Length: 481
Image 1: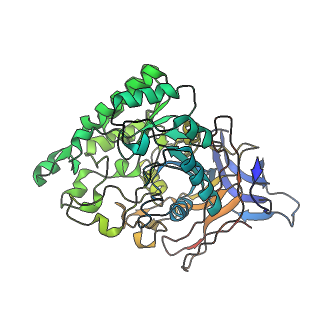
Image 2 (image 1 turned 60 degrees about the vertical axis):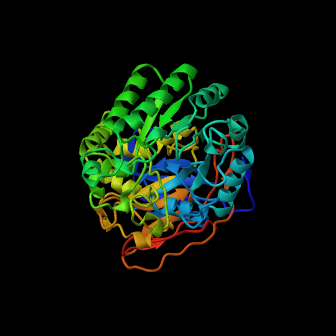
Image 3 (image 1 turned 180 degrees about the horizontal axis):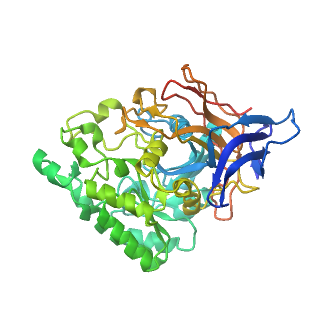
């Protein structure tokens, strides 16, 4: 383990919170003792003797969880910094309760070689905040033909491979890519969408019929998922289906798992909450890929989480400038900001599920998918912590987002669950306190710690600042000392 620069050890006691860790089977009031950035102990009470070198953090009223990890984020840098920068993406992640993100490779240029992987890790470490794990492209420039330098990207720190933003066009290229790295732990993450439906503006259904616009049917996603999972079966490669949106794709995923294929899937809050009815008035801001589907698909996705078919939550944070989301529908960019609303909207959609399931799908299951440390508050683990208020209603105000993208399907919605605190390696990078509003602040963080395992995965990649408030409470974005 190497330390970049001089830093004060992160020594804190997080006191008074309800600690819920599905991996440890813990659900009780505990003190999380952090020394030198790692979990040193979980105590029944607060330490009896105060220590001037240790900060005591009052977490009364919070649920303290293993740090949440978002496996599907579009940081937009390099290439589209008017939409988002790495710094604002990581700040939005902190404000959303995420201690780490995985950055998709559809930047310009794409993350398709070892140098760009190293650059992303270095740039994130210089910002200091949530950890940032690079996802390397499967093919050069994500064009779906010539293979990218997969093994060298893995050695440089890529945690997974994907051409996300689009499917890998060539079956031959995808098959050979999976064979090439079948021995490596990095999974493939598939964006499933048949490219012959690229002219689609929304889901194919009664709403698209009324509007007279081309739509993408469920089979466009499901057929692509079936192709990719057959590649997984043929090569033995671990596979993950991104942003599942249809009940047909869920059946494909169930088939794959029953057949012994190492396959997982993720759902997004907008596919758990929203339907194509939101586009009935040609609402260009709601254009997303995969598109918002019918209510029967929403119901199927919720059931899939309940029965364990889907075990990972993701935001698919895809910010754009406000003007890029304006009409006409055919010109609007696809996607919207999700980091700052993902936790609240997902908990709202699945309020009847056990708390431990929701927490595991945001933490332990994502860490297992990406092969990164985290997902548990076990002694010796990195002190990455997400604090939640389970009943602290707040209203989504997009103009107060930290993200540069201010478009969301949840504008004006009130949610009960709210991220209250985000800690990375014991350093508090975001917290909410008080009851009166004041302007958000952001300060750069100093040194961070990172390490790699034998496959080149970054184990403790430091990251970034956090800024912004979403309602009348004070939002404090902390700097590491």
